[in-house]
Length: 103
View (cartoon, one colour):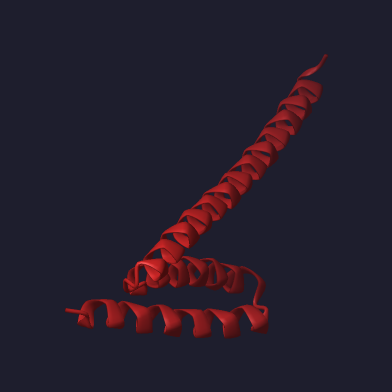
């Protein structure tokens, strides 16, 4: 093998490694988001059954979703992502204010 062949091979392996790492990273964020949403739903239902305020959980959920939408809009520039980001961030702020105004 000559130098150029070795260089091409190393670059190809590095490229595949980077793509693999990116795929693993994306998948890990998916599982993080899914598990956070599921436990939040369980806590939310429990709070509603106990007749407790759910403003804290709702604020966390809406901020979480809006951060993902804001990032996605920054990369894709899809108007639907911007619209849902604006709505979600407004709802998140509303729940946060309600949470802090509770006694």
